[in-house]
Image 1: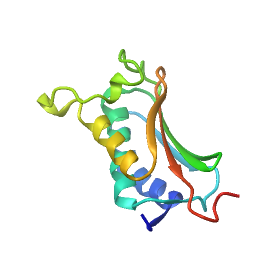
Image 2: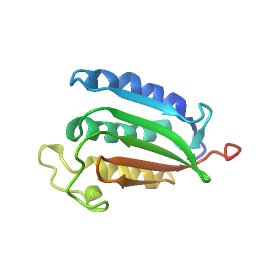
Image 3: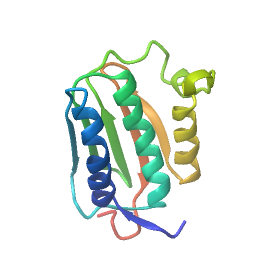
Length: 145
């Protein structure tokens, strides 16, 4: 994939689209990047889809404030999506397995993980409670300083 995405642009877009749905539930959303110039080699539309799944999950199943943060992690970028909810009773791998599609539940995280893998990254539940999902993506060449 030769497409470069500036994470700050992705975060600002997510903030503008998700602050309203969270505010309607009396919840806040903060988005921030350790460095506004961090770029990754991945399609913005794919990253938007992954982030939307994680934020939708936080809205539907989480509680309290939602925090999205981009940070460098070795030669990668880690994008953390956290909320203050109780988390899942499923273990860190089960949460990504496709479950019943009845009512649309159980498919989003499996899809997000597949998209992350296809983009050369990986998605994991890095903390079960309160939950933190972390998307690791390779830094764009020249951004690994």
